[in-house]
Length: 109
Length: 116
Image 1 (cartoon, rainbow over the protein chains, first blue to last red):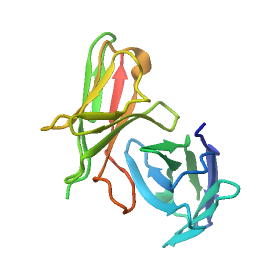
Image 2: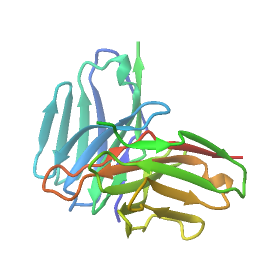
Image 3: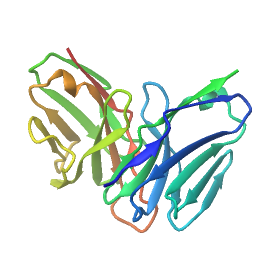
Image 4: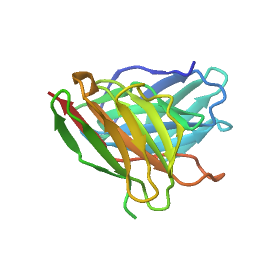
């Protein structure tokens, strides 16, 4: 079945890099996404990667895709207090998007 | 260009009442999706609609829940005889007509339903 797994919590010191990991099960997924959700807010699409790519960089964000291991990661360089949020890994499964439970990123001073 | 709009943002209902959640997709978008987020959980797909058609309702509970996307006006998610377990955030997303461009869904701010 379709499933997306990610760790629930991550604590990082301000200025360090954050790495959030995710595994998925549907090898036919064409797109993989990272969404950010701040408290009480909706979902903001941070970045996405097409399944025939293995890396994508966008300013402070780097996405790595290991299709063989079905592993996706999001690296946030120079983590700031404004990066504190829940980060959802998601895959495109047919017409719907399948989400992980989210990783809560906590920034330490 | 306004994003996906949902109203109300917060809704309180007593057990047994009806809840109506509205979603206006982004301009030019003809596909609407509804997701539910239970506390401390990720989003779960409920239903995918195009104008006047339900395309995929595999995530909808079999009873009390219905969705529509009429020719004119917003998409409506309707929950009849609400129970406490229906308390959640309900997100709507929209996407443009099928193209070969990036296929992604743009999310609204959500409606937070609380059932007392």
